[in-house]
Each structure stands twice: as structure tokens, then as C-alpha cells.
Length: 169
Image 1 (cartoon, rainbow, N blue to C red):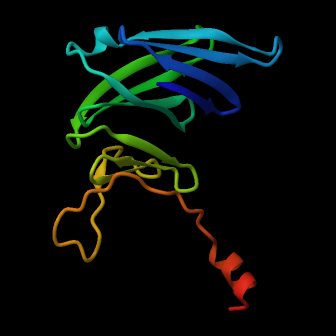
Image 2 (cartoon, helix red, strand yellow; image 1 turned 180 degrees about the vertical axis):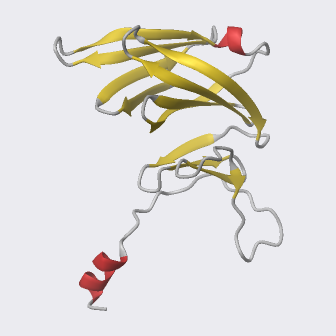
């Protein structure tokens, strides 16, 4: 995987290797280039060998982050941590491993709702507005049997005021 992400106003670049390493670089505005920030050895965190599929870093509180990593077998790894700018690294904390399905998990951020959607045959939802940061399965009202969901399209929410102005309601 290769990912760009922001924490506050700082831009980061990350990539994962087949050796179970994640390299993270932080953009230095003064010299106008990315500089090495941290290396995370996933083999020290997880004993099993697995294949990276997706990677997201979510900044949900002051200096608090979650690193979400999914694999090709439907597993989601959530690593809590803190941003330590002084020592140029993330202080990694608790790691949770969840089996959400049997196919690769696609992670889709929704900054407007401050949440994540996880697509892996089913849809799972994590909200960062609550204190329960575990995925919850999304069910549809008329759903009597499971339906295979393979992708989603983010739609921008419109405030009631904007709708009222636009449609004269």
C-alpha cells in the first residue's frame, strides 16, 4: 500500500513492504520535502504473516491516533497510539485484531461524519464521535438475507438549511 494522510496541518506519506514494515515520512515545509518520521515493524506486533491490503491513520483527539490496517483475508488491525512530535514517532499502544469477513477490506473515510466505512462483503461502520471505536455492522431495513457489497460511493451530506434555500422549502 501507499497512502498520504494528514494529522492536524501536517502531511504524511506511508508505504508498506512485503517484509511487514511500514515506513512513514512527514512533509517538512521549511525544506519542501518529505523526511523520515518512523518505521513500524509489523512482525513485532503480529506473529502471523499476512498480506497488507489497506492502511489509514485517523487523528480523532488531540495527539491521539488510530492506525487501521486491513489484510487480504478480511482481518482489521486497529492500533491505538499517540503522536510524539518531539521524538519524531508514534507511541503505539493497544492492538486489536478483528475478523470482519473473508475478503479484502476496503477502508473508506468520511470526514464529514467523522467516521470510517469498512467494505468486505458487508458494510461496517466506525464513528469517532462516540467513545466506542469498534466496528458496527450496517443493516438495511428491507434486508432479509445478506447481500454482497463490494464497493461504495461517498455522497456529500447537505444541511437542511442548504436544501431549504436551494429548493425554496
